Amino acid sequence: MVFRTFLLKYGEIGIKGKNRGQFEDALVAQVRYALEKVEGEFEVSKEQGRIYVNALGAEDSFDAEEVIQALQRVFGLVGICQVLKMPVSDPERIAENAVSFMAQTYHMTPAPEGAEAEVKMASPEEDAMTFKVHTRRANKQYPMSSMDVDALVGERLLSAFPGRMKVDVHHPEVMVYVEIREEVYIYSRIIPGPGGMPVGTNGRAQLLLSGGIDSPVAGWMIAKRGVILDATYFHAPPYTSERAKQKVVDLAKLVARYSGPIRLHVVNFTDIQLAIYDKCPHDELTIIMRRYMMKIAERFAQQDGSMGLITGESIGQVASQTIQSLVCTDDAASMPVFRPLIGFDKQDIIDLSLKIGTYDTSIQPFEDCCTIFVAKHPVTKPRLDIIKRSEEKLKDIIDDMLETAVNSAETIRIS
Ligand code: ATP
Ligand code: MG
Image (tube, rainbow, N blue to C red; front, side, top):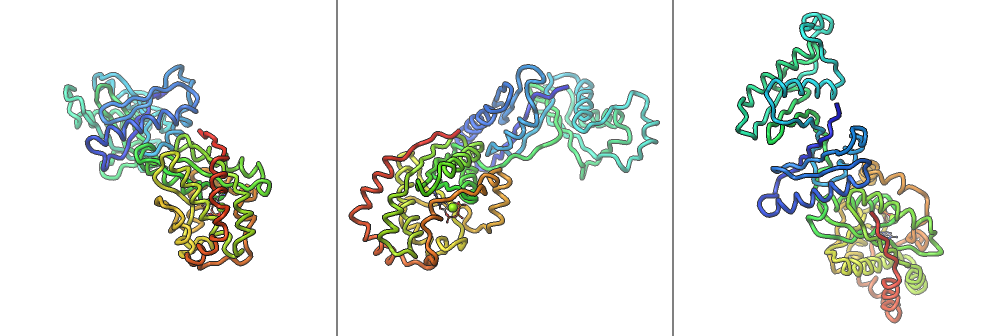
């Protein structure tokens, strides 16, 4: 038997009233997006505060594991259940289906009728999987109470799997859910979803995306709160290679598996970096460069309709991320700068990047524009007034250079 229906559970806290419809519509849109790349044809529907995915076509036209993996990237989902869906029928028929469902889900063979005593002796009950049946009768026309359905299904399971299953209503190892609605749904496992909010419910922000470990994770975290992402990448040809740029495109693609499509702006930063190198104190290079990155990213944010910037900074990680350095960088932007990794240790960030699947790409060894013009001894406690005074040296050329950098940027649509 192939179970071709998936029941999707979502967190409902804080989404009452009008927001609820918006939340659900965004979630349905994201579920459809996630399934676009999965083999098979799927129908996504919203019914009575639930979202269902139905696999259409032949039984072997889809792979349930692949469907589940794709759904585990949809923010807003807290649980994914593969369910047996059947028409509303008499309780015996429901119990029979519950037996088939459990047999298949937990790889058990139902005993032939009357074989109960024999099997019981062969496998002592201590090894039995404990379970509890929970019936919800949303369809109040149904002639049997939920407690009676619980009891009947429980009994049929016990006699189908003698010695293998045992009732424990307090701490069951597995649950058997029976939901009687317009149709009947039977399921057991609830595979955790990523949580968060559906992308599209909380505005848009511009990610400063480098080829490192941190910034893709930062983007993922903000997208998880329902924010649509766009990104800006600064490269410095010929000092940085085409391959380094491709790595950032690859990272953007990996983030887009969760966030949905991303507009990636690739900015040629070479002339600005050379000008800073030429005119400003070398120990301030990184800070000054960061400040211009903020200003340029903010221009794209305005163009894209974003309300904030996102970086992968974390306090004290490197010289350019001390509190004093962050003060200087922050001052360059007039929009709020979101730094979701601010209190994370590097290892926490690495663990997350492994979990979301960006790590292997991030550690590919390609040069970044920041590492090329880096000073031997960068300031660790820059003062904003001094930094601004150093920037004065660029005042005759920088506006034109910023304009050129923005206007000559290449925009790549990532999905
Ligand atoms: P990451 O792993 O994100 O590269 P990092 O530890 O290398 O971080 P820095 O190089 O100091 O840290 O960069 C701090 C932040 O500045 C990055 O997380 C990113 O948001 C932004 N940034 C740095 N370099 C670039 C770049 N070339 N293009 C776009 N953003 C950048
Ligand atoms: Mg970096």
